[in-house]
Length: 123
Figure 1 (cartoon, rainbow, N blue to C red):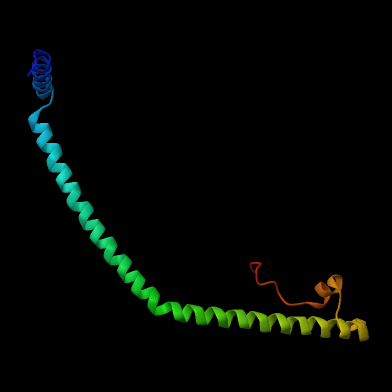
Figure 2 (figure 1 turned 30 degrees about the horizontal axis):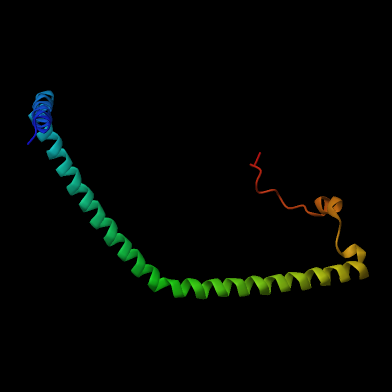
């Protein structure tokens, strides 16, 4: 080994020895203990989350068929209702053309509607 390599080795050992004096051994052990506790908690949390994900996947698999079926049913009902309201609007416009007094305009509706306003408190 050359003298230069020997000098580097000695210098490295001296730096390591000096560095060890800067750090309290008890503090290092406390940090290692806390890291071990945190690791255990993270592993427990990971296990719980994995179990929850498996359970959620199982539940979704059970009800996804119902969701799809109900979605199709709701879309069909919306289509049917749109068709019904279209027919009603068409019938109303034809009746309004034949009998203009059958459907009062907005200004006369307030006069004709004598029902109490349920949103207002009683006097």
